[in-house]
Length: 471
Image (cartoon, rainbow, N blue to C red; front, side):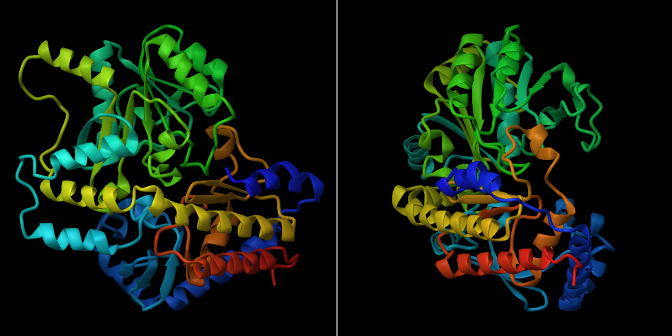
């Protein structure tokens, strides 16, 4: 987290009498912004009605309705940080596909690679001539020597869990409360309410997920030690920073304890960097000296084309090879036909060579620090009980004064009406932030002027929200 985020949580909220926005102001803003959204977007409304005749919930993927708007906003073009909708309205995009377009929409190196390699075949079920180069780049950037490609990070996490169970002979995994590891059913276990149970939002799961999944709160070292004490956990699957309930940062020393405890328990440690690649050119793991046994990342690794990778340390790879010697041939349940395709590898090479470098990341992090400062200054100016955190090129603000230390705490304070009001206010003024939480990404196409615009509009939004009568 940046210095300003620390100052805001440890100093500012203690020195000022922070006050929440009146409920009347929030309700009034939601009503005004909903009406303005409908007025601004007649073509999106028509497209939504037409799409509803064929698409479940009217969209190609049901999460696309989670913006909370009266109907989905339909995009016609995205380039760099600029998005144009079906009505010709333009936006500066700080969501960037919830990290899928972390390096911008259709960046030139990716477009060039796609045009060049697209004429030479997309998939052959054979390794391409880029395979050895991409393997070396992955090892160089992220520190682990052995890798595999999947179509999504969800697929990568499923594969990693299977490998860990196979080589340890253990059936159970451990995750953290309110973690995010894609659409992996076994990770949708929560301890909200005091006892482990499947997340009630999970659709169609018939197994008792608690039979083979343990869950503890992030940053709770005693709970982690107790959960691993029986020696039955194959792997801990962990985000280095919790990212789906706002950003929940690790306490000082937590990752060192996590690594020490897992080693003593004979449990493999898998770090899922799908949302934390913004931390630096080697992800959070290399930036902060973590030593995972396995590593997962997806989303922007191929510039937004479906692709993900998972990697293992040399000792883990040796255990996998030994396990495979005992295995009968046949279906493994790991890998899909389009994984490791020629086009995936070509685009991954372009991304790794162009963007996962110190030179490419330095200006992104510098601009993210400017954004962090701007948001912190606005929060302090208005004496609102909010805070801001940053991880590399990723910035988030939460409409609560204290930083949550775990997922359970964070889940109680996010997704409030005030968050929706802020999102809609910004969206109607040409600024896109992540709908699930207040996440903001800096990409190579983001400029200081874009950051200034966001900060200015957030300042105006809070000014309106703090009006006592909502007018």
